[in-house]
Image (cartoon, rainbow, N blue to C red; front, side):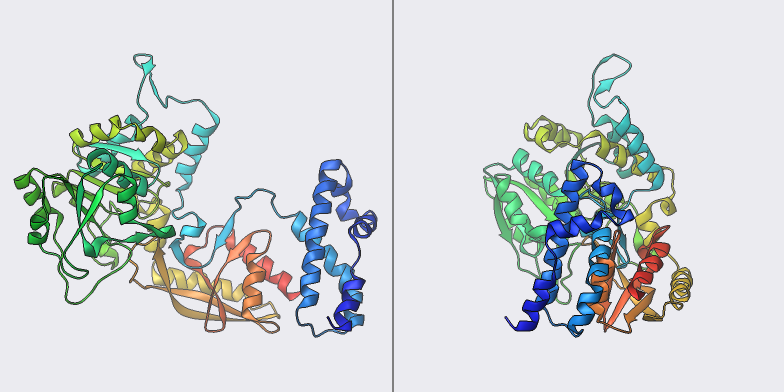
Length: 471
C-alpha cells in the first residue's frame, strides 16, 4: 500500500470518536437518546467508515488537505442519509425505467381503490372461510370463482400462489407417474430459471417431447400417445418468439384429438389477459376467454402480469377438473391468503365494470405519445435549472416486461441526463441509493428517465434528489 493511502486511512476516525463528536451536532440528537437508537447509530457509523475506507482504496484526485478538510462534512452527510433511510426491507422505489411489468419491482401495480380494499380486509376480520347465511365453514375460493367464470366463460375456477404452482398442481393431480405430451418448441424457461420440464418433474409427470423447436404437427402428438399418456399440455410462448419457418398446433386442434383419444388438454397461458391488445397496436395474443372457448380442460395464467392484479396462479376450466384439483392435498400448501384474494377480487371487479383505464398496467401501456412527450418536457424544463447536469428531451422505447410481448417496442419520450462532472454510472448509482431509490437505465452515455412508469409525486422526488447531486 502506498504512503498516501496509508495516510488517508490513518486520518479516518474510530467509531467511538465519531459518536463522541456527534453529541455536539443537533441533527443527531434523536439517535443518541436511548440504547436502541444508539445501537443503530453505532452500526451505521461502522458502515459509513467502511465505505470511506473503500473510497480511499480507489483512485482519488483530491489532495490530502482537501480530503482532510471535507472528511467530517462527508461523514455527517453519509450518516444522515443512512439514518434517514427506512429501516424496513421492503421499500418504495421510483420506476423510471419504462418497464411497466418490472419483475424486480413487484410487477403489476394495484389500482388505488383495490389497494384500499386490501387495506380494509387486512385490518379487520372477514368472512374468508365463513358462510354468513348458514354460519358454517365456507370456501375461500367462492369470493373470486363466480367472477372468474363470468369473465372467462369457464365452468369453474380456483387460485393458488403463482402460475408455476398452478402447473405443478395440475401435473401432480392428473399426471403423477404418467406421460405429459408437450411440443419441443414450448418448453419455456420463465423468470428465475424455472423451467417447464423441471416443474413437470416436480409434479411427478414424465415429459414426452414431440416435434422440433420450430415445427410441431398434430400427427406428432398423436404418434406419441401410449397407455401411460395422461394429457396434452400446451405452453404459450409469451416471453419469446420463434419466427420464420414455423408451425404449431392450436388448442382447438388438440382438444379435437383429445376428445377422440380420451385425453384432457391443458394450457399454461403465462401472461394471460382479458383484453385484446390489438386495438392498441400490440401483436395478436389469445385472450383467456378465447382460450377457454376452444374447449380446453384447464387453463392457467398469472395474476400479476397483464391481468394487473396480485401475484397468483389462476386456474379456470371444466368443473370436473377443478373439483379434482381442490381435492388434492397439495392445494392447501399452495393456497392464497385473504390479502391476495382481496386484491384479485378488487381487480376482477374493475374488469367486470368495464374500466380498463382504472387498471394501472393498461393505463400505462395505452398512454398516448403526446401525453408522454408533454410529461417528459415538463421534467426536462424542471431539471434545466440544475447546473450540475446536462438535460435533453429524447425519443426512446418502453417495454411491457414480465415476459409479455417481448419483441414489442413501445414508443415513448424520455428525459435524458448526464453529469457535467463524474460518470453516468456514478449518477445512476447516486439516484438508486437515495432515501427513495430511483431506478433508471443507461443508454448511449445518458441516464434515461422514462415518464411512462412514473407515478404521482415521483417527478418532485427526482428533481429533489438531483439537486443533491449538484452539491
